[in-house]
Image 1 (cartoon, rainbow, N blue to C red):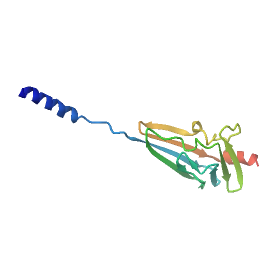
Image 2: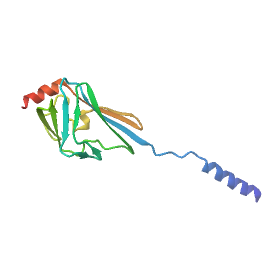
Image 3: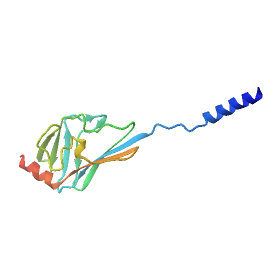
Length: 144
């Protein structure tokens, strides 16, 4: 009887000491870079997008703006719930970008994640980047 009790207690101790997997959060970075010679301001139609407060963002040339999300299971693309965004170059050249727009800037449509570079780094990290270029500014000038 003592042998059985010893075996049962031993098995219980062995199984209770097994390592349990911790639910790790996925860290995702969304970087908007301005590689143009102009200053860029981005104004979404809705200032709160997927729990991000994104009222308006101004990015000087050769600088960037980063949105970071850390949630178990991953994050939604921060701009996914907005249908349009206004892009200003030097506070005077206005370009309206719609999610379903056919006319897009040479860098792509900022509202579509497929037009961002980067992606999954490992199981728990992703990094995406959208770059504004001088070609984007020149394209926006054509629409004035």
